[in-house]
Image (cartoon, rainbow, N blue to C red):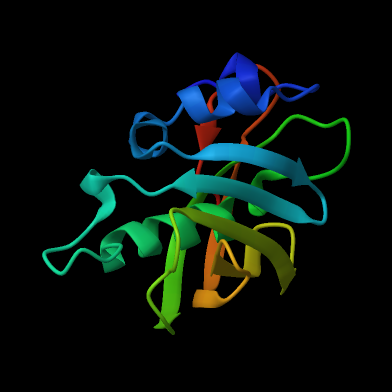
Length: 153
């Protein structure tokens, strides 16, 4: 699979979202992407809720996976993004969000060139933590210029 045009510098956050039918379908709005992290927002809709009328835990997990994983794709300012896959994601659910708006943010906390660690959190509109996560991700690099992304050991 070749690198999408939206991953090439300068990045187009709307186009990056469009490259992921799953995330685009959730209604996420990216607000920031850089070497120091990623941020986005979501207005809760009925489709995001569980049987009790609260945001579904799977929805929160998806937000955290994106918040933790997106910064991993950034190698540097002005550089193309790389692909990445989630190796592990550990989530702590803290509270149900109050209000319709939730915000997610993530940042890299360590690792190397291929294996990267990150943390993320989801906050409700008042800034109250809803959930937090720690993840481990693997960056996928092209084997050489012009080739498609492949996993490397």
